[in-house]
Length: 291
Picture 1 (cartoon, rainbow, N blue to C red):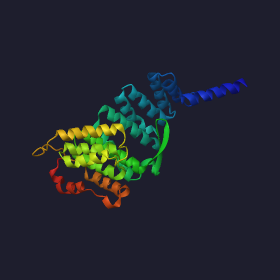
Picture 2: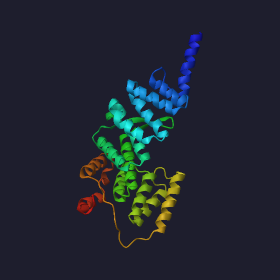
Picture 3: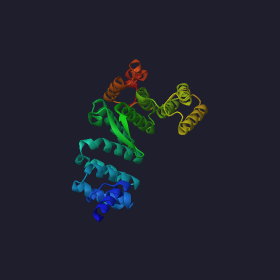
Picture 4: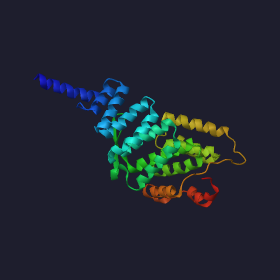
């Protein structure tokens, strides 16, 4: 009877603290991370789990998350590059997501763009979600389903943001318009308006912001969105159209990538508006744009 009670207590402990059962290095790492609240000790055990082949997929991902919390971002990036080959094919997508988060925190924008382009190519080659139309994701302890369509728009939104960080607002505009055609929302709309403001295309930007204010996009009622719209309108009102534009950054979108985006739009966007005028401009003036 006493043994059964102890067993039940152990099982309850694992449930309450959300740690796996067992006594291997991965379990000890999770215990140090979640129960003892000792992240440095957890990293030591995660390393032992990776080197010992104990739940390597989870050990590498969890270790990098803990490293990020300790501001050891560069070390975490190097760990993924060095040891992801030990992980299963099923773990590669989640490792990419962790790596993107690390690259964003460390300000490595060019590396973010390269990885996001790679993810988009995987999408239109049918390699995401292990060939399935949806995947189960988790946020704030809740599980939900994500479709390939939603993932495509999310990756495009991240790519547009990365181009914005480089000051390449023309390229970011192209990406955000594509993302909105697939799965429109207020956040991407505000970012698109920001890109247009930076290119002195004020009327276009104002029309988009008015649509957000009228709640024509998902997420428009969020207080943060309302604040963002107000900030962008103030910026818009403070600007005067310059007589000419100088030093516009080039698109820097290779032909293969543009063609890949077209394939994504053909798959996900409404048939009546699959091609944007901006791509006609790219074809006509691509020799005039800096690469």
